[in-house]
Image (cartoon, rainbow, N blue to C red; front, side, top):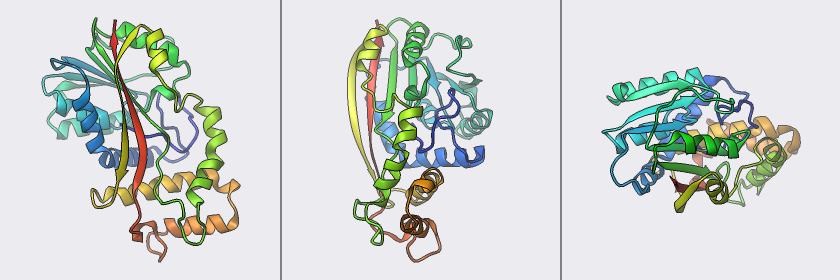
Length: 289
């Protein structure tokens, strides 16, 4: 599972375009996976599947947060992981091998916005986490997924409300509301590059021939007491926000933000006892009719 990225979409086949190097991006996704591990497991357990699927396709798999959770949840299944990033797929393959699931995992590099997809088999479950709203033609993607699924197969769509918040609204003390101003500064880019973010996919799923059998919204509120990845994830996320929002922020806001990002400084976000990861995740479980 992945949450929305604070930078504009730059590569349709993968939902996390960024100006950072691919290694940084992969590290960010791995941190996100650790922070959201319990929520991802909860979603896979909730899916109305009955018998476990024999074949799963993970569309826009990134470095494998959903892939590894699905392989663990369904030990009898084989999984095809699809992404445009060769580097991310290599990292995913290493994780699958470490988990003893290499023989059940196939990595496919593909542009999901291309007119035709490579052969992906006939899965009983297709999983798309934080990827659908980045597609150039989501309606076309839904039709392709409908045609891909086995009769009666399930499509699980997981979408975040947006990039998470890390601080309370009155923080930091020298620039209250800083985080919200960063989000506001990026709103125009998001509207232009990811116009489908925050969409209710129920109608589009029905139009593509699916029957929506379940919808669930999870509230995410993860503190450092749950995992030490929270602090590192916050640093990485806010660094990315600074990169994009710097030209729209005041000098005072930039100074305060740099203080939060200075891991060795007195105002480091890592020193705060009010740090958390907060967002919402909505899941749609849609059956191919």
